[in-house]
Image 1 (cartoon, one colour):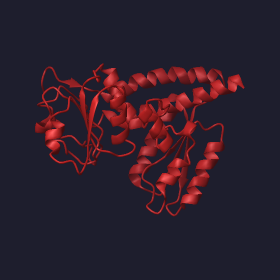
Image 2 (tube, rainbow, N blue to C red):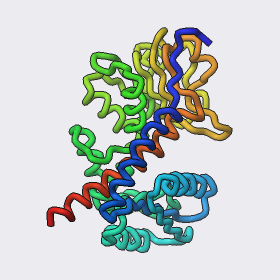
Image 3 (cartoon, rainbow, N blue to C red):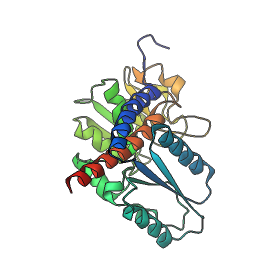
Length: 286
């Protein structure tokens, strides 16, 4: 490993965020408010169940209430939306997270759209996406927000840099491209149809890998000194970046695991606390 290589430790960033959140949760408790995150799990996908359990455990450790709504795989779109509406109408619930993916017969987009914007703490609605693109979203998608939090924690300059994002999903690639652009980076968004992908990536001062393929980004794709953020998580704790190979050229890099993932969960908790504080502030003025 190079002596001047900066390891972007997501666990450290998440730990700092949670310290700050714990104090805010205590202050809300004085006002009689307990932040509450409701997580909806449809079906019995084991990976999704694990993610929901991890999020619930993270909530409890901070004193955030966690409601877990489990629905059978044969749940219809209408039934799922009905459950979401119940949570929308519950004043004790501050954030709603629908675990992705849902069974194929469900209209996932319709279900996401049913989440009220003030409870869309995972940034999955089209309104939330649009607000993020304009730069004023209260709750941008959690993984893109986590990537920005890591860059800010390590005081990595964004303005004027060329950022290359590999991936264009509506909850990762597209929103992080918008967030980087709003911070005055020059952004190239690459995807499965991009020609000469290696040549594109080699231009990046900041490279975000969000493609969902293990060890997809190769070491010789990385410009010397570039900042590499791996948002991928594949079986066997393997990211989208060939970590060992990219170490040779990168100036800074996120390891997997222990990088973007922990900060994503901390961001979800932060958004839930933010939503609870907004609710408390509205209540005090009513």
